[in-house]
Amino acid sequence: MKKTVLITGTSSGFGAATANYFASKDWNVIATMRDISKNGNLDKTENIFVTELDVQNRISIEKAINEGIHHFGTIDVVVNNAGYGLFGIFESASREAIQNQFDVNVFGAMDVTRTILPHFRSKQSGVIINISSGAGAIGFPMASIYSSSKFALEGWTEGLRYELASLGITAKIIEPGGAIQTSFMNRVGGESAGLQLIEDYLPFLEQIGKVYGGMQDAADADAVEKVVSAIYEAATDDTNRLRYSPTNDIQPILDARRTTSEQEYQEFTDTIFSAK
Image (cartoon, rainbow, N blue to C red; front, side):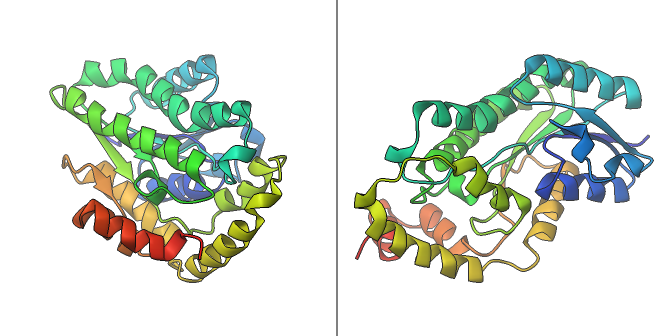
């Protein structure tokens, strides 16, 4: 019997690529997005069912999950991919903008997961894959709001996995690198538009812009393929492995975060990010 995956945020980027990849592996795919008119012809593939899901609307979450189960008979894996990045100086962001960041990146994933869990419990099986970021392990400057949302996503997932393990359900995290060029990154300017400009930060912004330019130059050319493959591996490897970090661009910082002392890590990252 074919397995079925539900993926949020499939109108572009990782979500669209992941939907096509699972379909090519003979999975049934429930491809969800806020605006189904932007499905990029996903609806033309026989084993892909496109339906509306807005992670900020619990009614649409319930409707999409029920429609997906009705269409394919079951759901085996959920990929919480929907998200965006609010990048800019913390002081320049409004409280409303910060709340919206958490509503999408954290509470949206929680609401999708809460809705699917009764179905997974009834089967005593299921896999929840949360798309985090290298910024879920590393506090990046100009991304303190985005990083905090992904730190929250990772902390929640890590705690959740223990609760679900006794039921045969696994929870996993994918950590794409910080300098990946997908349409997600192309959205950053739009999502961050309207942030207040505070001139005192301009010298720092100029410096950090050069740092990120260098990181972008070092980004994996095949980053999207690596991330999609990691998502598929997480869905199919039948392990309780928690984290998958498939790209190389920020691996030295991740290694320092997880293998060195706090002082060594701070000294290392200061050489990268601190104002000179």
